[in-house]
Structures are given as C-alpha cells and as structure tokens.
Length: 345
Image 1: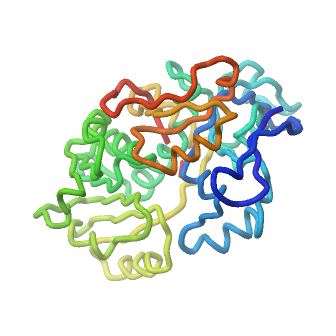
Image 2: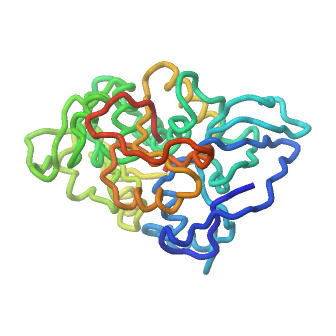
C-alpha cells in the first residue's frame, strides 16, 4: 500500500509517499481502508518534533529521541472497514467509520482497535468532513463539558476561535447553552455562523480592557495567559489552556487553594465514548465541519505547508482517492459557510 513516511524530523519536505507493507488486523482490530485523513497541528508537531512546554522531553522519549520511532504519521481518519479480527463484534466489513489513532493514518490502510477511539461515520457527511471531526471537537468537548462543566446561561469566551480547536469550541459552547464570545483576527462571519453571539477582532481591540466578565475563558493559543486574563473572569470563573507549562501547573495548584478564579488545564485523549458522543452531536446538527483544502496523498507535504501558513477558514485534509483523477486541492472562500465539522488536539 502507499503511505506518507518520514525517517527524520523536520519541515514538510521530510514526508515522502512510498510503498509499505499493509497492516494485518489483530484479533480485536479492524482494517480500515482510509479515504481521508485530516492534517492537524498535532501531526505537525509530531513531524517536526515541536513539542510544547514540559512535553518536550516526554515527546522525544515517546516518539523517538533522534528520529521518528514510527515512520508513518497521521492521526485522524475516515474510511471503510475491509477486514475484521476473529474476536471483533462491534464492526463488520463494509461499515463506514471515523476516528483517531496514535499513528498510521497517512496511508491507504490502517489497523484500529475496535474498542479504541473509533465510531461509525455520521450520516450525511463525506469522509473528508468526518476525518476533520475528532481533532478540535474532541478537545473542545473535553475541556468545556468535562473540565469546565459549562452550564446553560454562562458566558464563554474562546481565544483563537478561528483555529482548528476554536471553531469546534464555539459550537460546543453553544450546544451547552452558553453565550459565546469569539476572539480572533479573521472569519467573523464564519464564527457567527458556527454559533458565536459576538466576535472580537483582537487586532483592533483588547478584550481584557472591556468592562465585562466571563465565566469561562478557553485559550487555544500557545503559552498560558492566566495572569493576563484573570481580570476578565467572574469570581467563580475558569481559565482553560490547551498548553501545560510549569507556570500554569503552579497557577492551577495556587488558584485551587486560594479560591476565586481558577486556572485549569489538561490533555484530551480520544476514546470510544468520546467518538460516539461526537457522532451523536454531528447527527443532531450541533456540530458541523469546515474543510478548507483537500489534497491527494501524493501532496501530503503541500498539505502540511498549507497548515503551517495558517489563515485557512477550515481544516486541511488528505484524501487517499484524489490521486485517481479527482480534482486537486482548492481553497474554500472565507465567506462560504456551507460546511460540515472539525475537530482532537
């Protein structure tokens, strides 16, 4: 089978499409013919060994000290089950599924544990849209529903609302019944279409200067900004950062002890239950995906470069079938809001 491989860390140029051995599913695994794989910031970090904060040492130890331990990258997928292990009962050959894996999704086939973060693909969306779901949507659900425990009527502010996690966080917060303020530098129309009640352009206005308070601030930008944002929280407010730094860990402990606004952080891990929740939300119309570019597998390097350039109104997706005569990558205009879902950090 064809797969995008890398034997060193570095720029998108380290990615090369080669022929590799097709995986064989174990007794409790399914073999998925991959139709699409989203290119995420997590994939970019693994490709470049760009591990943030305190994860730098652990990242190298887990994924390879000097070079990638596993050459085939890619973590998000959508496709069709083509074989099942002898003990599999949850899926059958022919089922369309989507989910996440630790590695191996930039390939024509991937073996997936049946009890892992995988579920049947939501009805009414294509494989590219489905592959874009787990990334930001899984993170947003974990942080807003499970960690912050957002309640109906609370005021939620999303910093970086036009990024991969931010777009999903706007939708999840709205689904949870919150009044949502999106902070970004572009795509105000898209943020409102996804459910934001208000949009603040951070290049023109500093939201911390407003005489306003929020119950939850989800900060999707790199670093931690608790000290800068704490004045914009209510007395029981929660600041959530996607990036665990030593300073944030101290702030989390201190704010928990003293009372008042809390600093919070964590890690969103994919799970079977989480994927089933996402599938239900998509089919209920609470989440919709935004795919900005679709690339063939042969252009996986270009897909990574597009992600790194940023300022895209949606996810970048690699489609394994696009090398067989399907039109090549095309950007979606920023004003077009006829999309479907994105989402796991």
